[in-house]
Image (cartoon, rainbow, N blue to C red; front, side, top):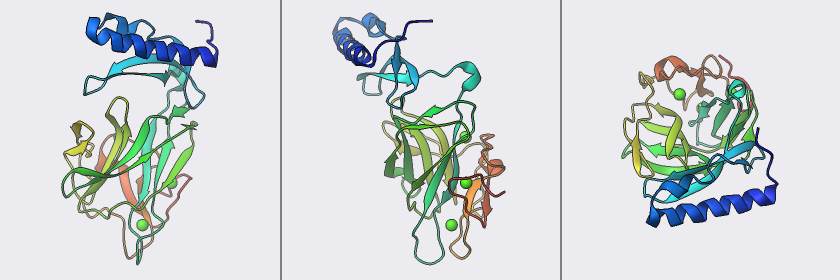
Length: 233
Ligand SMILES: [Ca+2]
Ligand SMILES: [Ca+2]
Ligand SMILES: [Ca+2]
């Protein structure tokens, strides 16, 4: 095991990594990894290691990435969404759930909302802090009402989608950042399995937290919304 590095030193190390990484752009890629793998602490206070990564524009980035022990991996999922309400739309939310065995670092992650009419992003909610195993995070947001629309749990650093839902139709191509991503997992959620503007309720994973990467299997409408706690069915 490597010795812990004081927080101040970690910042110095991170800055040094960034400097050498940028210098390496002209001299070759070898030095980018000089300090990669060094221990650090994430902004959420979790133990991590320094990673160095060129983004889609070729810009070299470095950050402290949470490095959980293998027996304590987090599993973050979009767990519930209330995007339509009886009468005027207000009080909507998206619920995240950590279905894994260890804490999840949310720094660098965002909820990205996609308009199915054009596949473009119309709203982004940045996430912060950490989410413990078995814990929920409710983000208050009035998302669009579908036909279709979608939401992605997105890693802004790797520019990748962690979890996604396309509702009231299939969004096969969502333009997020420099790439396109499908928001359908497996079989699309049938358009009639949807939130309602005549009956209170929400769309949620059923059973709670289950993610088989098949939207039609994993999601159901419930007349009981459960923000911040296990889904009703
Ligand atoms: Ca609703
Ligand atoms: Ca999934
Ligand atoms: Ca819930």
